[in-house]
Image 1 (cartoon, rainbow, N blue to C red):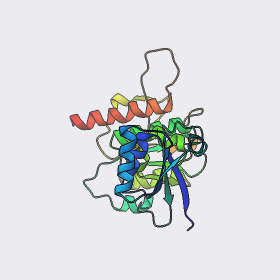
Image 2: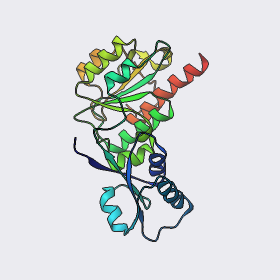
Image 3: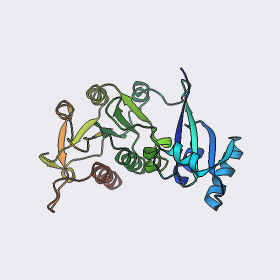
Image 4: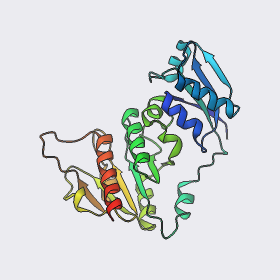
Length: 252
């Protein structure tokens, strides 16, 4: 399989990438004239791993960052056929009887800011994996997405599946209960139990869950909103839901 370079920008995201065991960094680019303890830490981490460090003009970083705020740091990673991440099927088969993971599924979340924020919340909440469609989804390697994720993309398995409904069926076959977030859901997320194996499914920014994905969810739940707004941003709704699951598990 041919190798392809991907870019991660931003001091925090690059630091997490350099500390990750699952990503291969091919080179670190630093903006010419930038001098800061956090920048120096990145250079130290890269040199410790014998990763080439190049000092480049700001314009070169800006071009590679594709409109993301690079903060003077950009790391290039190489995706190849030798990736350490298992397939979704292999990951499922490795679960033991005592594992009670939370998995987040994002149904056609296309905005890279929202996608990155969802990944960040998922990693912070201790999700075991994130599943997205292979098509009609934000680019996993977008500099904006990886910067917004603040290192989560380097620490969390993200599986790209051709058929999200089939992925849900496989999860259900392995004992997962699937909860789809929908404004018209009959149950409040505060009234359901997230203590077992959970698959939490979030819909797109504009149209929510697709009808077929909605039908494959075991339960449709909603976030109670006493205010007058009709809906929450998908990344906010993701954070609210995941941390309700975290709260329940800490109590239970």
